[in-house]
Image 1: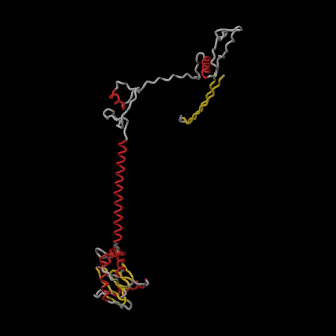
Image 2: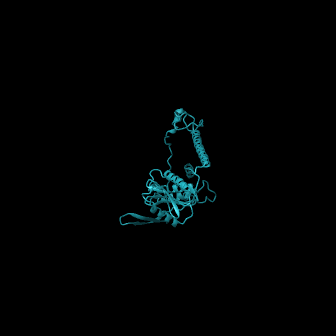
Image 3: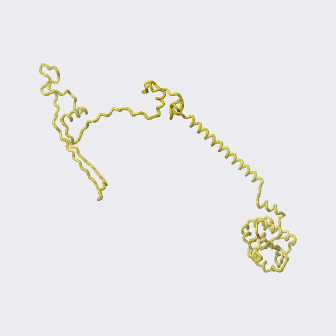
Length: 321
């Protein structure tokens, strides 16, 4: 027996699925499939048709037909048995109503099942159960490896959860071990955690009459301490007239060290209390004439038409006469 091809057609002759099992030109397969509807009559009850080249064995299933093309010397009984097996495959892998859309939807499953039934034109010794197992491609080794992998993944997830809990416990313990300053209860020292005894040295500025209640107010705001106001500096003021300007300038020069701070005596009086035979040397005279300061300032302002200031630049010169 040599099965040339198997096909699923509509009753009008439209080919929905075809699978050839021997090497044949595509043109010949198409010609054989196109010839079959012309040979089948509506009034014929048998399911075989022969031509000079091949034998057609077919079986109607609802609105479709399952067709086998074999050579003329094949065993007709074996052909009919193979045809029934193909019909079972079609009903198995096309659940529901067997129609054109359903066959096209499951075309690949049908082709794979046809390949399990016939190989190189000869029927395989298989049953419908064998075909289902081969199509499902079940493997004990694959299932075993899948179970092992799932078990390892489950163990890894459990270990990760345990590690996460351990890290959380360690973190909580580390936060609990960190304390504040004192070991007194919170009712006496609010806001301070107990980490150990507190030692307050004597003379630290705490009144002895405060007691523990006074220490409990350490968390409260302290009153501001008195600070001595800074002395207002007396610098050089420009454009301000002062009495005795020469004397004040001289005093500033003395303060800065530019003029020797020697005892200044009155004119005609000796510097020391006792004079020699020739008389004491006259005291050094310091020039105390008035000075004049000239200040020249220039301000360059750039404004827009609305009166807004865009830029301003100020320059000045100070001249001592």
